[in-house]
Amino acid sequence: MKKFLVLYIAPSSVLEEWAKTPEAERKAAESKMQSDWQEWGKKNAKHIVETAGAGKTMRVNKEGTKETKNDIMLYSLVEAESAEEAAKMFENHPHLGIPQASIEIMPANVLPGMMEKM
Image (cartoon, rainbow, N blue to C red):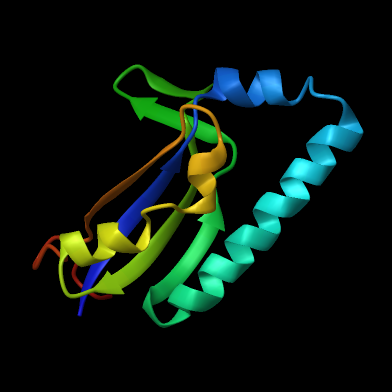
């Protein structure tokens, strides 16, 4: 099996607007999405290596380090025979219920010699 990096993306502007939704409405929708996500996760558990939420983002460049924002909400590592097989798992994923949301899947290729074991 090959490993794939999965990025769950939603524009930060959409999430900021969502935060303005009345609390009862927001909590009900979030609860349904969590339930749908758990159901999806059980169905695909054998392929999921890990899933974690993104947090505070730091950008490092030649000028230094500073806080920034991006549209990555979460990431997963999954195992599949091909990119197409991995992508198929995410068709109709609950994350896509967020307006303008998307999911990106790319090979998580090991680069021999880049990081020698210490």
